[in-house]
Image 1 (cartoon, rainbow over the protein chains, first blue to last red):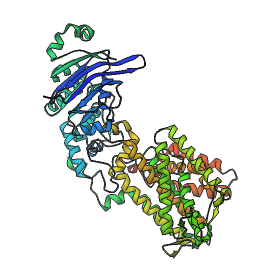
Image 2: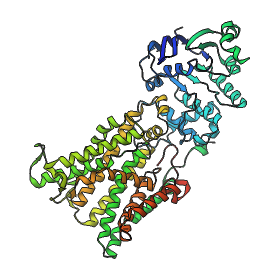
Image 3: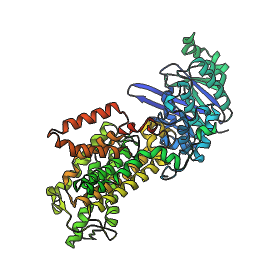
Image 4: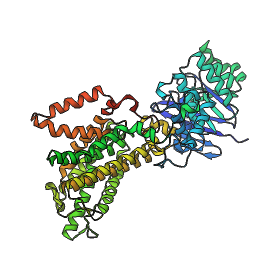
Length: 248
Length: 341
């Protein structure tokens, strides 16, 4: 089966700092692929290059059979790549529903529609509400985003990603800053999404990673040092030394 | 569940949300009557000034309050509209042709669209450059464009240069005489109503939602698949066209335009009016413009250093009413939350 996302020999430097080093990686359709690695390994930089916010110095990224290395981020989003940010990124003054409705609106060919009221348009609110239901935030639909709890805002970001009807979810530490309870809830939500989407997830919570991932890749100093099933990775001596060892 | 989300539409909501502006517009409609009753023709001129400034400030607030773009070139954009009217009227009076091609006219039914087109185009062309920057740089670059426009018209000797340009022909609106003060005032007031209605719809539309989202989190807008630049550019062009309309009416009302109307402090005045009234609502700047013009008119009678108390009033309002004067109208009128009005 052809890969949904294929990254080959990607390189990115910031001055003297090598953030991505000859990195190759793929995500199969329907697969949940987890990316782990110590702080500063270049995980977020990689996600940013996949989403298009950063351009690689060299290498190629193909998505769904097409080369997207030089596509701008908004076009990648339209092709089906949805990113949730490590630091929560929503529209703070909009309600939760309006946040997700805008993500649904983004799928329309263009936004040059000046007259019809958007907030009451079921063409936008219905799919938005669906996405909120999927992640269990529908009872908070009319709350302003900045009044939501941190955990709820993380969920909201996920709902926005879903409303884009993506093929691939790029999740950059979806549990970041969450308490144990919220983290477990997010893990359950992601477990439910697993069957419907291909997912590339960066996460520090090892319980979540091993519970969700079909495949785990370990990133150290911008390069993949190991890749395999959760069990293989757990047993890999290199990985233990480089990463898991630090966590006792 | 559903009823907490579905908003009841229709007239009742419209009235609940927009009663303050309906009240203000209704009161403004009595300005000529008041002027007659007090036998003070100055009042009509004063309120004409307030209404036209309100139009420019509302135009500015579309990009300022909803797009997060602090533009210091709206004085210049309104000036383009003003000069468009004055120049075409000049050629009409003169019998000559603009650029040797276009015959002049004194009919506002043609002049106003021309003025709006010229100012909108000016906003779009400068916007292509200015929108590459953001924050303080955007303010600086729009200021620079405003000054370029100012000196352009100063240097335009054919149309009066520094001295400005008098409108000598009799302006009409689709053939109707509008030279009476009160008539012209009502024309301006109707134009303001039309502008408010237009922007209320646009702000709540899909386009308006994108514009507001750009102001809050542009990175997120891109990430969901919407390229922000073209929407901000379109918003700036629309805002510029509306400022051009205000400028066109300004020149028509004064029968005169001079480069001093384009100076950058006029652009600053529009920002003060918008912030004073409240940037969170389409109609907030109307309140700001009326208060601004009244203070500007009546404070000098009290002290020749009227700018000092004026400044104090502005500071007090901004400090104590974070949302501007519209906050006095009640908390339920706070900034819109996805849709907007």
